[in-house]
Length: 121
Image (cartoon, rainbow, N blue to C red):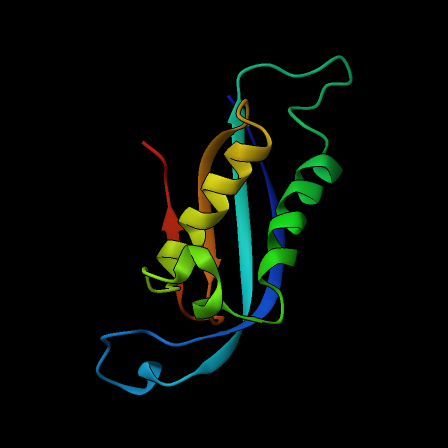
């Protein structure tokens, strides 16, 4: 099996509804995203997927979040914009753009020290 990964990111604000603590108040992060995809075969060029093609997909998703108040976006109107839910948001949108991509995992860094990873079943 082959695995490739691409990093992206965006700047966005959020707050956590129902949370008791500082994160209940609006604040921002420079989020970092790492998407890893896998497959058993390579194309005629010897690539699982061109890094640039995967980056284009990921950055199109990042662009929908960049410099936004995440809580105001329809996807996060009922679910908290946690790192976990942001990872799920990326997974769902990657699959919408290219259902053939096999996602190994998506890691969302809220800070350099805090990250959440989504691994599809």
